[in-house]
View 1 (cartoon, rainbow, N blue to C red):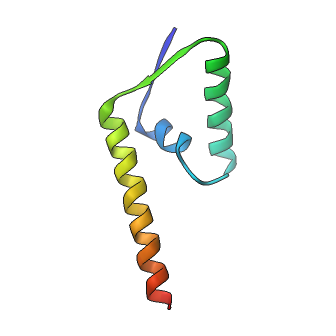
View 2 (cartoon, helix red, strand yellow; view 1 turned 180 degrees about the vertical axis):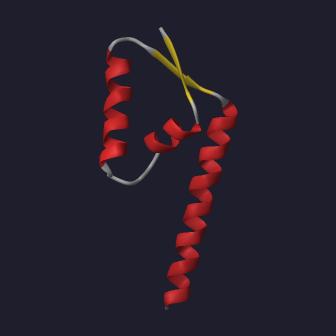
View 3 (tube, one colour; view 1 turned 90 degrees about the vertical axis):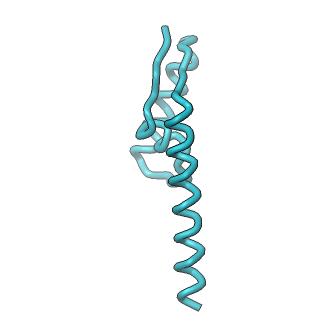
Length: 68
């Protein structure tokens, strides 16, 4: 079986947060992998998630510098 994940799922899986939604998504992925499921994503999804994480990092840095 092959499962394609989109940028929303990929974003949850790569999220540094420890929210319940993120944990459940990670558990779902691990259960698929343990069953031998092949999980793939499109290059565009990877790009969008990386860009979003980078922008969030820049925003956090800017907000931290503004508070000083």
